[in-house]
Image (cartoon, rainbow, N blue to C red; front, side):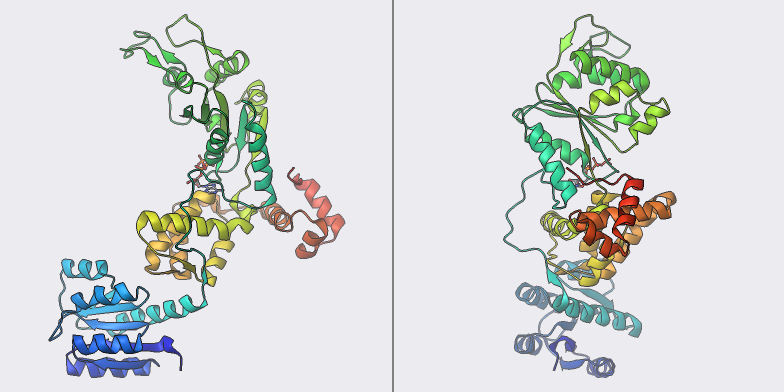
Length: 452
Ligand SMILES: Nc1ncnc2c1ncn2[C@@H]1O[C@H](COP(=O)(O)OP(=O)(O)OP(=O)(O)O)[C@@H](O)[C@H]1O
């Protein structure tokens, strides 16, 4: 007989015990029931069921006292606590002690039905899920990039080459795809890694303040400049200065940044002394700078200066082969940060994650996993919890983020198939159900090139 449908019922009220027993048996569960805490503990040790229904007020021991004894020894057992106490404290205490769910008396049949179904589902999901997170994983070093697809390997190569010089870098990619992370890894791989990494967020600062933020100012340079202040360029020393969202840099400052890039010199606001900087410049953008150049909102000469080396970070939906490793990496981090203990992923949950278009990329994945891990309340990341987290994430996005044209979808599907087949044209064409010449034509149309 399958152990998964076994339930231990610990309830001293004889009439309630009998009716619960009948109800559960009708649901197809195998029920063992007892009327006291001691008997309950004995039977629990003997049959180690997947689900326990536990009354709080028992004649010998309190259910709240039994709860941690049970969950400490078997963290996977789902204990549904029932009680006549309606107060907040008891509910919080029961959940804190490891209860899976908490139902009030008089028990509503549909609530009990749902709680038992969910607990049983988790028992089955635990059996059918794949373990992804081991307990003995070493703590991950800070700033680690996860990704094993060809496009990511190409990025690692570029980072390696950059570690030998101070060339300026332009990192392009959608929001949340890891541009800042890559910038930090470039910095960490350089000989000047002990020097500062300084960020300038070009979206949040006003024109005149941005200039003083960047170049610093002299005392009395403008109203409010009560003290001389060092700018970010100076603070970065020989380290890295990271311009986030460089596409938002106002045109007058673009001219000043260009001048700095050309001569490596700058003048603090209100000063006539010229300063020099040896910092590396890394800029990132999720906008199409070429289009901005066409529209005359970004200087072409600045773009060329910035992209001495350029890195294109693929969106997550174009490298779904990396999803399982990212999930594993984040769940490990989330477990440590939030004291959860998700070590397995329900197969259906992984399918949901694969099917999502990820407009917010890796950041969105991390957020969804955090919500789902908390919601799963156990060792298995449940598909249901992933669905709820994805719905919440979708609601937070502007509607146009979810709408993509057929062409965009085709382009992405082709690109991700090419990534998955390691750019083997025959294999990709087979998987896409098109001929090789057709695939080549589509690749040319969408400008898809094998990463170098
Ligand atoms: N390949 C990856 N491996 C591990 N973590 C990643 C990866 N890519 C992104 N992340 C994580 O996802 C989050 C978002 O990444 P990051 O801030 O670097 O994105 P971004 O492209 O700079 O976003 P934005 O354009 O919104 O500024 C961070 O927590 C980062 O550590």
